[in-house]
Length: 271
Ligand code: HXC
Ligand code: NAP
Image (cartoon, rainbow, N blue to C red; front, top):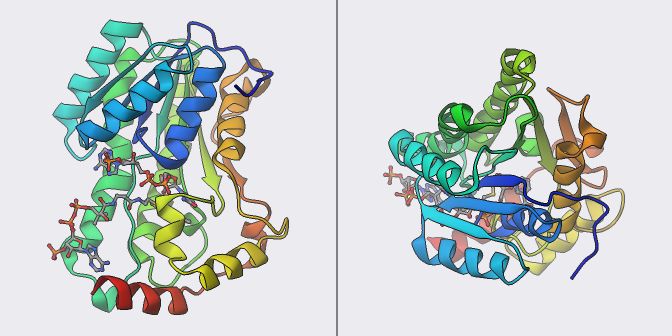
């Protein structure tokens, strides 16, 4: 078990999209620091597997299958979570979808699907969780992406959706600040062994090229993101709100990315 300088014993952390990848890594980080975790994602099997792994870390965990595109399902899930573990101390909103496609290769429904999951989903999660957030003291963390501020070919849907997510973060920080609720975005860089990175860099060649673009010359790890989430939620983050925080090894300094080669490789594999 990794040791952690943070202590979240007894705190309640709710993670939307928490059954895999970066968001599950965040859930694991908080679980190791003593928090009780509730999580949602679409697949009941993934939710059950994640809950079992979290319990194996010695904490209590609870999950429900819910699609963030459905406000009523989100409402039911946060109510059940609050019933089980009490007010939510940390709300992590990270459900997302992605694929590489040019605007001309994207149907209206393809564009809408990603906006519905990433942006509308974040709205529904924040909106439905609000009555259950600890006031004062709750910390909301939205998981953004560099696409929010870096125009990126083959990513129009994600660029639009995540830009909206970051604007939602800033507006919520202003609206909920007086209630003692802080709201921030974390912008992960390319994180190894995640679905998101697989979709953008599907071949060994594109993966290595991505790592080489990072000033720190390595891909990120889910622990890198979990540590920032815990810092933000701890007393050390108590005066941080409305911030859009890259945790990306400096990749954001390097300018626009062109996924032409990756898109071509991806198209060969999936179509
Ligand atoms: C063009 C595509 C497509 C593709 C799907 N569509 N894949 N269009 N190119 N490769 C279109 C479909 O044809 C359909 O449009 C519409 O999108 C919806 O597709 P469905 O399969 O019906 O949607 P759904 O079952 O809701 O699945 C959502 C999904 C899927 C986003 C398409 O990939 C998913 O569930 N993803 C979750 C996991 C994931 O993506 N993880 C990565 C997150 S990383 P039509 O017109 O035919 O109906 C991330 C980016 C961060 O978010 C950056 C990383 C560095
Ligand atoms: P991932 O493992 O696919 O994580 C996405 C999670 O969201 C999964 O648990 C998925 O589970 C859930 N989900 C998807 N659609 C949902 C929906 N409609 N309703 C509820 N849950 C849903 O991918 P990841 O790469 O770790 O990405 C996690 C977050 O990090 C995303 O917000 C992504 O944009 C961001 N990000 C990732 C990277 C990277 O390098 N990977 C970089 C920058 C930003 P189900 O399939 O069970 O629904």
